Every structure is written in C-alpha cells, then in structure tokens.
Length: 124
Image (cartoon, rainbow, N blue to C red; front, top):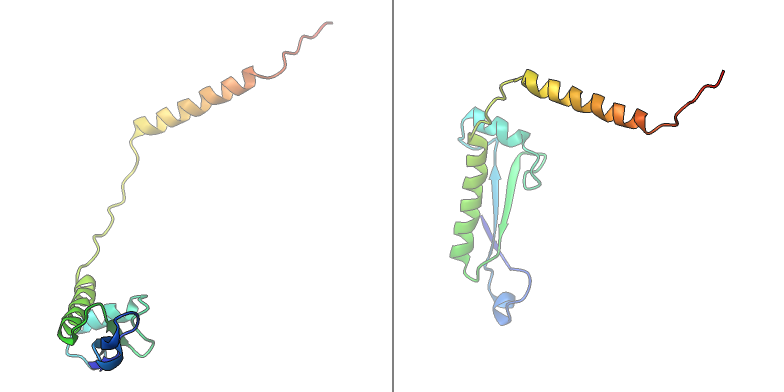
C-alpha cells in the first residue's frame, strides 16, 4: 500500500499531503485458497491486471487512514463477490396451456389478416 497525492479540488492540503492510497494486491502470491485465486483471475474487472494484480485507488476522504480503510474494504468486497457461487439454473418447460394460448392467438390473428383481403367475386 502506497500513499500518493490525491487528484481534484482540495486547496493547499491536496498539494502538501499524500492522502490518497494506492493498494496493490498480488493474487498469485497471496495465501488465498486456490478456488478464490482462480475465480478472481477469471473476473473481467478493469482493476485486475494481466499479471494478476488487483489495483485499487482510494482518494475519497481527506485523511490517509480513511482512504486506507476504504481501499481494504473494497478489496474485501471484491473477494467476497467471488466467494458466492451463482445458483445453477434448473431447465423448465413452459406449461402446455401457454403454448395452446399462444398458437390460438396466432391463428386468430392470421384469420383477421386474411379477412382484410380483397373479396374475389368470380363471375362465370
């Protein structure tokens, strides 16, 4: 974790004090279980580099301690999001009644359209 100068407005404080925090977390070198590492590396998150390093920059607060806490909290949230397995979808079929209703509606619509056509009167 490195302290750097914040961006944006802040008066003289922003020019003097390094309050922003730059957190770098190496996924491969960490002591996380293999399952977490694998899922973190598969994430398509812009904060994760190709080398497997998570980069989080916190500069919301004017104090370094608060920014440090926020960066660590964001890292924890990222890891927790990977810990939850998505539920598997159970394949289902639509009810027979809904199929019949849909086909019935289609045939009625077709009959309505054919009834709009020209009436052919054949005189022999």
